[in-house]
Image (cartoon, rainbow, N blue to C red; front, side, top):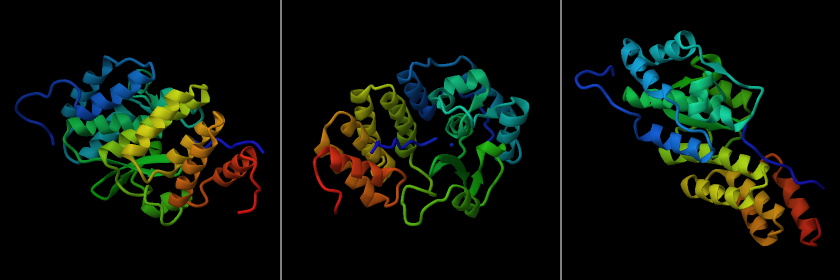
Length: 259
């Protein structure tokens, strides 16, 4: 039986002195892009400054107009390459996945001192501002919670989903996708390190334990693989592909399938 890969296809109008340079979150997101081999884009400061000029009235509406109408950023839903989640690539090509568009939105919100948070659901990511959801694949349209629960089949009782993420958890989601790319390239030690960082920052993210288990299994490190799989199972029963991976692992370990 073949192991299944689990992926996530998988964020004030200012007066006085002008802000200078990207903020702390922007720098951290650029650092993740650098890990993936994508250097910073010179367009970031230009877009940040433009956001300040356009931030009048309802600033969420203003950001939506700036990003999707004036600047013409578009969603990418066919190509799941990691480049579409990385801020410099998104800036240069004006195209991004839900996570890539979230990165752009979040750094603009940071410059404007708007409290915008990331929200995770299975295979998708969106933003929230004071109870208002911001759906980036629909040009910032505000969609109700029930739409997400139905569209993305959000399971009940999974603590990682449908809540605003902390900054460390947000960054962990980006690192998770970078870890997936490393794993698919066969760079298992690098993927293992990244998944471990994700788990440290976001300990109730079941997919990270599951994919760490897969990395261990691919390296024939069976005991830690089982430990990681069982941790994922304790956090989210019914996680797609997990039961099949556990059965495959039990076969690899010479155990019966009976539990």
